Amino acid sequence: MPTPRLSARISSFRYPDGTVALSDILLDVMSGEFCGILGSNGSGKTTLLKLLDGMIKDFNGEITLDGDNIRRLSPHEIYSKVGLVFQNPDDQLFAHSVYEDVAFGPRNMGCSETEVKSRVAEALEAVEMADLAAKDIHNLSYGQKKRVCIAGLLAMGHEILLLDEPTAGLDPMGEYRMMELLTRLNREAGVTIVMATHSVDLVPVFLSRLHILSRGKLARSGTPEQVFSNREELSGVKLRLPYIAELIHQLKTGDNLPFKRIPLTVGEARRDILETFGATRLE
Ligand SMILES: Nc1ncnc2c1ncn2[C@@H]1O[C@H](COP(=O)(O)OP(=O)(O)OP(=O)(O)O)[C@@H](O)[C@H]1O
Ligand SMILES: [Mg+2]
Image 1 (tube, rainbow, N blue to C red):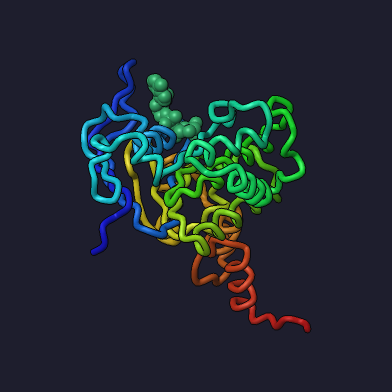
Image 2: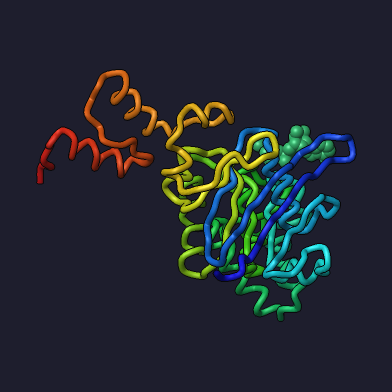
């Protein structure tokens, strides 16, 4: 069994005001995984990412990074491998211009100005923000700020990326493109990715493994098929089926149409509809 890149055994974590934000968490992130932490508002997603990034250390339990106790690693040792993109871009951005913000990380890593320039250009290209490199950060829209935050992390070339709601606030095409970009990073550059989200319609298309958080506890871990197999359990944790799955579920149970399974994506649903009704595609 290979060593997980990140392994969390958290018995509890309590904020100073007494809120128990996490308890009984057992979670491993393997090398090359692209997994999601799915949960409703206040379920503990952001808190969990902050623990995995070593920002919060006063929890009960243990988190390891490549087998080393994260509490014993220096910030430099953690940040040379793991990068966290915050949920709110205003918590992350601080330089005046887009270029300067994205350049900060690589400069801090000691890259030459030529290297910085090429890393920034590549990262801004990836998030489709190249034409706004000179723009004042304060004048960007929310979605543009989110993209700059992600570019900032891309420019540093982390092996493990923790992303807190990377698609929230992006327009529908932007959401899709962001997921495609992350998929490319994962598949082609081998970046291990953990993303927190409540976009149930997007995750089955892109993610291979999901962890459902509910009131700070792990309610379920598994493939999208496993996690979305129980509709009642999902509503119990304030989530829902993807819309396409809900439609087929209603056709199957409400209208007795003979679907064999509940598809989770439009592509699967299309195949199942053609199969179920024996339709042949017109060429
Ligand atoms: N600094 C803090 N001090 C006290 N309680 C906090 C703090 N930050 C978060 N909490 C509480 O911890 C719980 C988990 O919050 P967290 O931000 O991790 O949830 P989340 O799943 O990221 O929610 P969202 O989907 O709204 O981003 C919530 O009950 C929240 O009120
Ligand atoms: Mg959050």
